[in-house]
Image (cartoon, rainbow, N blue to C red; front, side, top):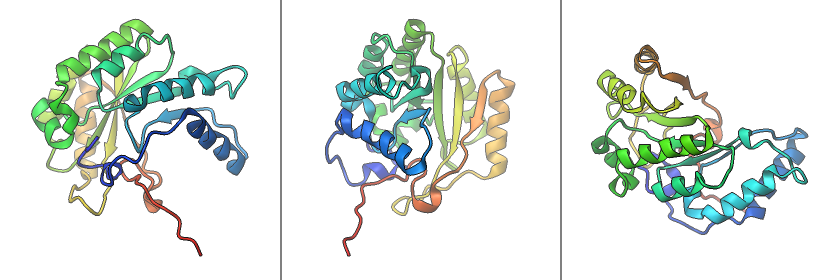
Length: 231
């Protein structure tokens, strides 16, 4: 999707995953760890709405009582904001959580971070999210990567609170992770806490994403196409 802070976009699109390939990842994780997977988030290297039919089939396979029988309420699908996809998903009669990659409180800043914002204005995207809640009753998650000096000041926090105050959901603040091709810098702890406090004072539920996987370049925004070298 070309998001500026995301390594997954740098090498372009290779192909879409098939449902069995997505499902195979879950089975392999369970085999390697010896633990049952109980929660799944469809995101990372790609836009699920651009692989719509395969993703929906995967969710049905994942949650079927004859399969892994993972509760649909424990499945989250993340999107950059593909409006037709959100509206179509709302009609699927699924009980999954929809997560929107928001990352800015207005179209101007969002366009500098996410090319998809040139196709769908925030109003359109949030209207679609509201429809999703009305059809499914499922609260939404709004993902917001904090980039120092770009989208992390207190005025933007107030604007974000005003933007989503009537939406049914919570904000997941993600301190942006570094990638070598970009000079985006993570907001400092003081700025992150100030941003969080403003949202909470305006009645918005907030969590700060725990940093996991950065040491192996597997954290949010760092996933990229790579290959093992044969010896």
